[in-house]
Length: 201
Image (cartoon, rainbow, N blue to C red; front, side, top):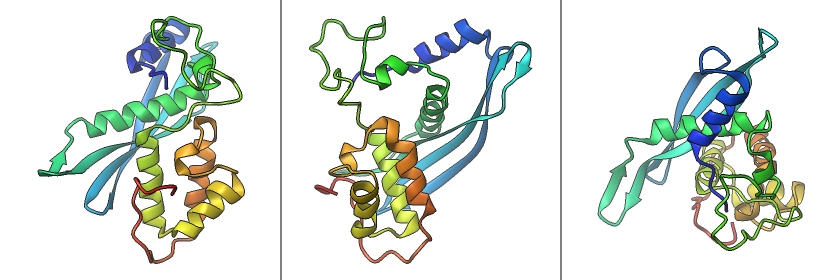
């Protein structure tokens, strides 16, 4: 999957709206820590604002996540970049709402940030949109753990409601809807352990 550099997004926002703080800005609204099987995920909620015709927009929401504490063979590892990574991820989500890198997300890579020396990505066909990132999958799993969703609950949402073969097949353009569906389920006591690496769920 084509990787979009965060700095490129900021350059685009600056080119279109002006300097950060004058033409566009953002506020960190909340940080939330969620734990699952000894690992911890930090989830950032931000609001992006853009100025158009001298007027600030309504807040454009973005939610992103990053692994804060990871399990490794040598023990637990703390990621001291996790908060920054979560904010960056949230900014990317908010930026998508105003069309930043829209050609990438709909599967067309024609601009300078594409890797032209590499083979064509498998999602270059518009009928095969890009799938969610590892961080987005972690965020989804953390939400499932928080809500106490069983495998059957998740399958009903992912496959029954949205038609995906598994969580790992969720596409970027549907991620926010799937996440909202997870969050809309009334919290119930968890009855099973949920592993983000399980197959197919």
